[in-house]
Image (cartoon, rainbow, N blue to C red; front, side, top):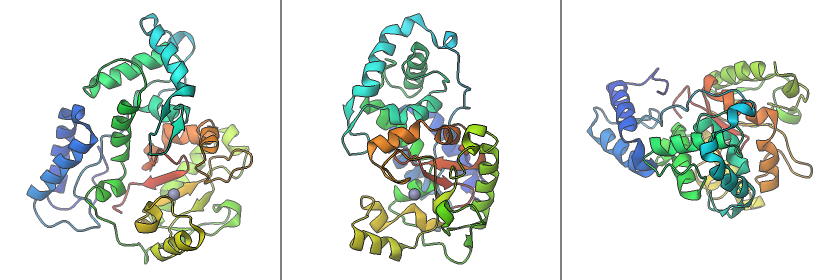
Length: 321
Ligand SMILES: [Zn+2]
């Protein structure tokens, strides 16, 4: 269940009902969920303001699993599926976010979290966990990774972002301005100054402090520094126009960075790429870093959710966009 603090009026009960409905309708898919939630919104009490998302997000992910031992990752009933997944992990030709990609290793940490396994994507136990997730979604429990089922998972994950829940209703939140505060020393990537809402910064600081208890993460001081927080729509539009840096049409029209809740976090960079390059070799590199893997396993405990195409982009869910 999402954080209900601050939810006005009957939204609390509506959200609880939505949560029950979500469980009941888990097999219907993200599109159906959005339609359902829209219908519920229409029948709930007062007119909803942009600052108060009227609908619940997806349920939270299952508890993170610690990395499992090779013995724990065996499952002789899923050996063939593990073989097929091993092949597709590096070779699947697909377009999970509308752009052609080869293989699904970039998304393997996220998928592992979602299907509640600590086993690697090549293992029989991973295939078994995927089959259990597929069954829970009303999909054929093949244990095989494929594009259609990934799109279901992507929809579930995306609806944990209140910004996306609003976007599904074609609502773009007003830019946050008055309540922003600058970062503390050492928090900006390369000394950069960034702005966010105070509560989002506080949650970020708790998260970064805990992550840095991992010596592997602490070894590189750039890890978890922030290279983008609040961005004004005017500045984004200018970047889009002048530099052609439009982040699809998202940045040009309505970026989550206008909320003061979105944060781009340094999780590593492949040689020759920047920390925000969406080139596939860079994203693959990022998906293997200890910082990104720590975030996948732990960021939700601090209220942060990821946009799964960008390993660096996280949004704090403790306040409405
Ligand atoms: Zn971002």
